[in-house]
Amino acid sequence: MQTPPQQVPAVLDGPEVKFSDPHELLLGYLDWYRQALMRKIAGLSDEQLRTPVEPLGWAPLGLIKHLGWIERRWMRWGFAAEDLLPYPPGGDEAEWNVPAEQPAADVLAIYQDEVHRSRALATDASLTDSARTGGRFQSPEDAPTLGRILFHLLQEYARHAGQLDVARELIDGQTGE
Image 1 (tube, rainbow, N blue to C red):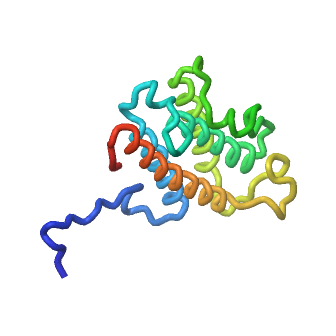
Image 2: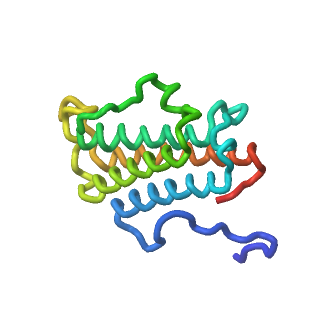
Image 3: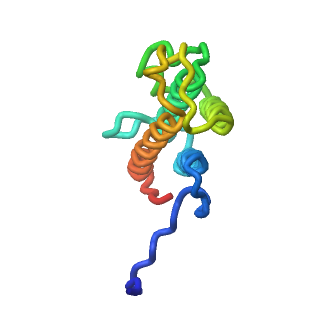
């Protein structure tokens, strides 16, 4: 069966098409979604990055800040059991809002630093390795595997990338990857 002439098959987005190893696939898709977020905010002015999008109620830069905290919570506090602050002082409000005096470049640098740390932890471990105890998880029975944590991160990114698609279209009409 042929594709109708007016219809073009969608490009297979994501990591290298020859990846078959689950570890490579999870890390590849996470990196692809992380890069997709950067593509989706490219070209937005500082004001557009910071202004909450109605009816969503959050700004694109706030979403990036939130995802930095997600990386930190799940990989550094969760998987590696690092002794660190897993939530910002001020709760959800502080996690999603960027103070006017904080440069956008700082928010992006903090996010990229968390991504770098997460990637290093995930690259050096096996999908079957359990999270260390003492951070987010207090007992071995509660500690998920790295594979489970990465899959959770992947669904977080997929959901938020879709939300950012909608936000970008509401901001300036731009659509697509």
